[in-house]
Image (spheres, rainbow, N blue to C red):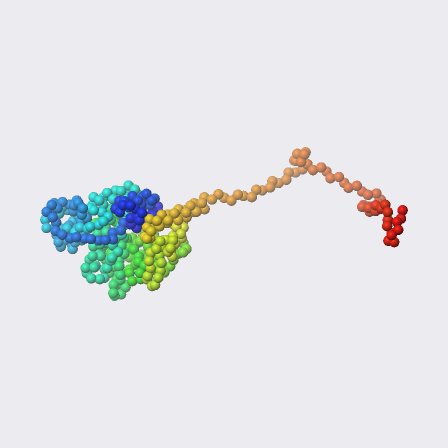
Length: 398
């Protein structure tokens, strides 16, 4: 099955709530949506008296990420802390998010997405820095964990993130450190969501940011609970390739499918290259990378893929990609079910003379008359006498 959808609420959506966006995606004929968890506004405070004895997920107009003693596991969200009653003098960390007010709001959104057959995923905040200060590393870790909490509440199957810049030392050391960080995050997410949400690792188009093709594939092979995200515009910018032919895309698609034990998650948009490592995402019709070769490839193989439009046009390009795919699928169907070419008709063998009807029989040829002895076969024509013969000197002869 192949799904198409935008990375965020459609631009044409009149309402700006998450449920409005899901309903609009469904009305446009799309079946997927990547929720954007971009702005993070956490607030940590002491529990109020009226909140004591209640479950964190029952508090109205609040998305509680953690509740417990001030030093409770360093503020790490846990399933136990969110399902245990709040105690006096507990510390409560809550988020203010424009797309959902509280956990009942998340549950209603989850029910709507399932009723409309809309596959949800969630993208974590884009600011990630694991090699800066200790505060930056902790903030990056918490943001990915909070994204996992929201993804679990929405029923999303993936929490997508990238891993930020390399450290200042050797690149191999940075990759090893990031592998350990991702291992901890994947283990935490598996325990918190009970295996319903997985961590998606996205490649990067900048050479100074972790996320080449080989790095992403190697990481997900080493860390269980992670899946690769095939972001073709980022790979095109990273490798400075436009992927103009299906033959160039097929080995990449096979690599990512082999590393994913489920539906392949794919981001697509147009892209323009500038200097070394500089690029920008564009609408598909203006970019250097076209969707037509990928559509031909997806139509030729029975892949299970979710295609997300990260183009500035969002749902418009998602519908355009769906159209290109349906055209490729129609051409493939017509090719597979084309009628065989008509065979040349053979002329029947002529019947023998006796078997022919009397009217179709040829009359016997008459023998030619033999000329008499001494008579030429073709006598010379006699000249016709003229009435008057005019002599050369002008006289007439009667």
